Length: 447
Image 1 (tube, helix red, strand yellow):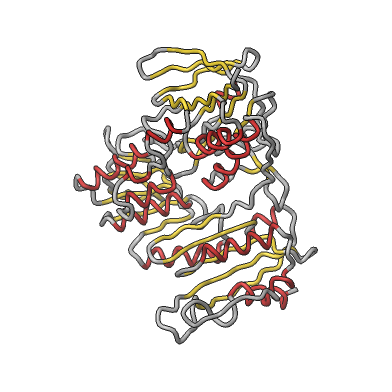
Image 2 (cartoon, helix red, strand yellow):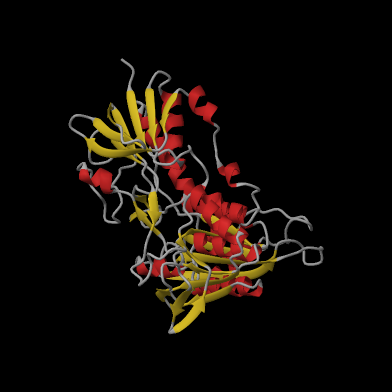
């Protein structure tokens, strides 16, 4: 009898799990279940489609329908998993017409992801307060702009919130970002680097309010204004980007243990506390490679890697996911922001005594046309002298520098070793002295 693999969730983690399972077991019966009306697409691309960098929302769809047929997947669209029975090894599902069915499994992968967190603010249930977590939601915001909406507030200054706000400004919408914490990108950057990002955003016409929560949404049925610090800002609509909540209720009800983060507890094979049940993506816990503590990065890169490991193991193979540095990068207007490892704030919170090296340099030789500024900040553990974090803000070439710092952290490179890195130079591509090396030398001076 062929192995039966059921995957709840058909986006990043789910489809990569299916692909890995298929490569491991060519004969397995693989069923993918999703509440949405199409298969995998890039949620990360939604703000860029909204900003018209990507011509159509449909372009975010990763695989055409024929792909699922070619891979011999049973893709159940507009279908919800209602109940998991881990003793009988079954999943009860219900389609859009209300028809129920019981699916038997040998291995189950929970890739239920996350949803946008709805903050407890008065009036949050009014019309015109929108998430940006699906293609359909992206189309709703797009239609409002095309319909003449000219002012908006974005709640939350994480990557999603800022990317969405940038898209709105690019579409001609007067936009204000409201962040209750003291600075933008509070989970990722330290205040000194975040302040630079805020200045760059504001120079492009985006209004940013930090350290103040939204207090109330005003209007009858439709939101008309947002109250912040006692002042009312008229708006046509609001985008809620306050963060995400892990979709773990289905697994928890089935007796699957949650970890200290509130997400599903997993081991390096992405196994849960229940035999033959795996978890991957935003709903699953993993380990931070620096702190060795549980973390849920809610990143597409982590989701696909976890999905691959879960798929291989669910199909009878062997693979492990060792953990994450939460490396992330984005582009806003004409500059880029990237992070990896721990920032200074979280490093100290986790018990590290740190030393920082920070420089401002150029992305090309200073005399070469088009040279752009770049800021590099390194976080060093004073005791071991290892690099444990990096933050970069610049006009270009941020991604590969973040990748290089990720390699350095994973290999437990000391700041002295990084300072001796053999880097390359050409006037149109880089300065003679690589900015990461200069930042390492600054940290050594402080040591």
